[in-house]
Length: 333
Image 1: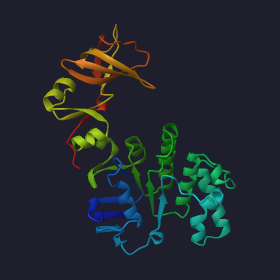
Image 2: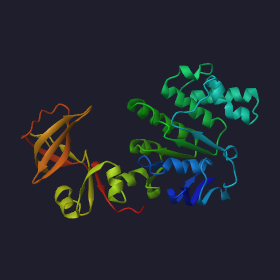
Image 3: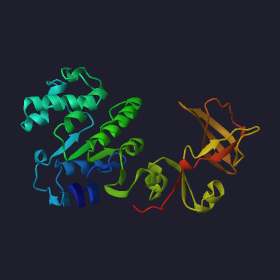
């Protein structure tokens, strides 16, 4: 049971929205299509669903070309950014919709609806009006509706992007649990790398209509295939090999995230100094202080604890946090 894309192109007239995409999603695997807005990831997902025509290449399921198969016969579940629930139906009516279309008996529908609502954390919500639910609750209903007919592939297009940050983070954790508990095979579109790395077994990074890199989240995070991918994944500074060797001890082209340099404490028992720096400015964040520092003739970001009292001109000692360091170009895309 697997989805395979071979050389898929999607064109709108002279505009090539998706170009030459090869990708496989194995049974029980969750793959995230990750990239900035306008890179073609939603268009690619819609082509898999049958909502967009493939201009070249093939979308196959278990070796069968889906070109002549309409959307409703592909056996795929769809979840969009806004959920697209039926406002005139209650929660149970929404979740049961696919089961009704399949001709499931009333008792089977009721049992399946109850099971799924428990699974998404909405047990007992059957008779609630969907218009009375919060945004997060509505997306949970949309997920339950998509899962109800037991689809062979679940397609999620920015399913959490309409929610505020704290709710998005919580629902991402819940969705990751849900996908694993149900053993779902899923293709998830997102522009948020935190979301992609939380949900996915593999991440496929898209840019300008093409897949640039595919791999496990940890490898994509630590070894972005090129500078553009590194910058998209939060590396604000890119160092040449000579500079990287002096600063972080790695002779390679290296990207530094905001957290790559951290303040280490002074005084007895504190870690030994790695780098000496001068504070140029500071900005408070929710759970840390971001510092702009100068090391030699160059400026960098660094982070320290919220309780720090540094002012411009103060000297600080910094240690390298390897989780904030990416070695660019060492992975294959």
